[in-house]
Each structure stands twice: as C-alpha cells, then as structure tokens.
Image (tube, rainbow over all chains, first blue to last red; front, side, top):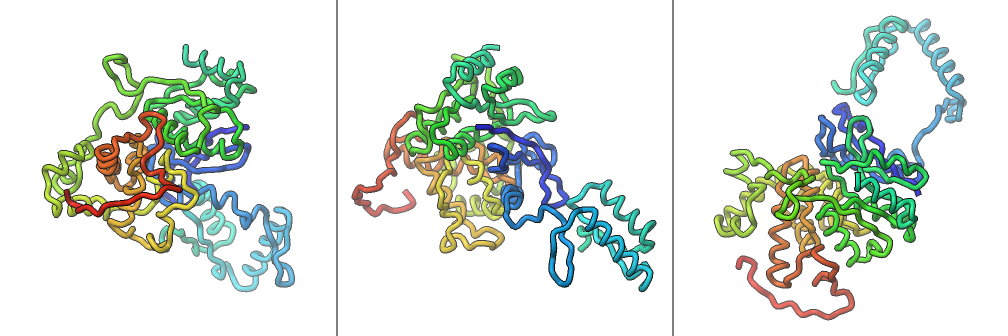
Length: 135
Length: 270
C-alpha cells in the first residue's frame, strides 16, 4: 500500500490556504491543513477540510462538453475551443464586441487573470471584464 | 542517524509494510508513508516540529487493509492516541510498531522535539474576557463563579466558524456517525454554530477519550482554548473513575455497551 502527502493550495476561494492531501494508492482520501503554510497557519474552513470530496465526486467534469442540438456531447479540447472561437467571432461580427462580457475568477492565478483581461480587451475588443471577487 | 537506521530495519526486516514519519517536501515538513520499495527515502526522515495526526492516518490505512503492518514515528501524545485506539478496536496493536522519539523535556531527556514546549501566549483581551490557554481547569473553577465561567466560555464559543476542524484533526475521533452531524442536535447548514451546544456535545464526547495532544486547538481558526475545555471534562473522569485516557491499554469506563448501569442524579455545579 502506498501513502503519500501532497501539499497544494485550496481551490475554493482566493485566500490561497495551504492544504495537504492524503493520497492512498493514488486516490485522495483526506485533506489536512498545511501547518507550515504562511497564509492559513494550520487552519482551514469547512470547505477546505472537505476539498477531497469534490475531487473524487462522480459528477466532476473531466473533459469539455459541446452543446449540439440542445444536448451536451463529449468533445475533444480542439473541437470545443474551435467551436467557442467560431461562435464568439460570429457574435462579435453580428452584434459588436460589447455584446460579450468576461467574468474571471479568484480560483485561477494572477497570471491567468491577467491573460483573461488581455484577451478580453485586445482580442475581443471590449472593456466588459470583471472579477468574481467584486460580485 | 539511529532513527533512520531503526526505521530502515523495520522495513527491510518486513516488520512493517509502511512507515509513517515526516520528510521535507517543497520546504514543508509533512508526513510521508515510507515503503520498502523506496527505502532510501528514509534518509530524508525528520522529526517534524509540525505535528500531524499520524495515528489517524494509520487508521485510514488500516481501514483499507486491516492486515497492513504499520510503523509510526511516535511522540508521547501519539503513544497515548495509539493506546486509546487499541482499546476502542480501531487499530490492532499486533500490527503497529512504534519508533519513539523525544517529546517534552524531562529529567530523563533534556532535549525535546515538540512544538508545545513553550506555553501558548494569551492576549490581554482574551485574559480579561475569555479563557486563558494555559489556565488549569481546577484554578479556573476555583477563581470564577458559574456565571462568569459561562460568560467567558460563551465569549470563546461565539467565535466558532463551525469548520469541524477540531473533530476532523482529532486522532481519537473515529465514529462513523458523528453527533455533530446529527440534524436533531446540530442543524446542518446553519451559521453561526449554535453555542454552547455545539461545543458541549464535542466536550462530552471527549470525556474519557481526549488524550490531550492539542491538535484541535492548533487547528482552530477561532483560537478557542479547546485543550483546556477537554482537560476540564477529563478531570471529572479521572477524579470519579481514576481513568486517564491513553495512559495505558485499559478500557474506558464508558465502554458500557451490553451492560446495565444505574446513574444516580447529582447536582451539576459541585
């Protein structure tokens, strides 16, 4: 039997608490607070303590889905990204760039948030970009 | 180091299948399960100043494979937790090997590896309105009347964010069905936590169970002096039954399943 511990960062909110996953035979079994982490200092909220539950959830989406004829179908990443790009381009051409808005997230990194706003302003061409922390 | 050598011997001589200790990863001292296949990893074995509930991890492993032989790096608190888990049939003592390391300094060992060597500082406001981390339950009872005790504990309890961290980290909390999740006792999804009932349910369940390791207090984001609270309930158990949880392998006076007991009503405030 294999038992290792993997330090990580909680993905629930933007605080960034350090968590420690107890991994038994390749499956996350328990979440513990990372005691030496400077942000949470060995403490967690109820969501952090139960982080492993959503990772192991059977309802977790592991690949992209594309809606075709009203039904969500499994697709490859290339198909999904191309489809989204095609439809966004069409919306932009028909209704103008301000018809699109982008909401970014505290759960992604600073750099990803930067990229998202750059994409919104430079590629789509709108200032309609906001962050979930302002909701 | 002798400790590394001893742990290697345990694995190489097949006395244990897995050895639970600590190692440094990405600058963090964290637990790790060392195995015979990667026995050289044991060179990184450390006595971490950050304590994690290794006994709880051992229970998780034993639940998956009851025949698994587990080695544990054990301080005194780990040893107490293991004794208690043996008596409650959560772990089989035949499958556990411990490698004892230093705990608090004593006349016999001047060197200690525990993070609890220095008392935890208590702020002035907490001293004036709440409960001092380092107060002894007997002094606390003697120095404050029941009204003041209630108001001081309520000051502490009302800070609770109901994270269940005290229960989740506790090495001796192993019940499949927890009273803290019973909808008739603690309403699910309601914040703030219902005080003081939430904490008193846990406190009563810690009587005759708590091995005073202090992990709950460490995990509490609201700085509630839980260790002192559970000492208070445990004092009652040791005074009446002479039972100190985890002191040695002995059944708790509360393991009364299948027996008939008669309880005599007594006043609460003695």
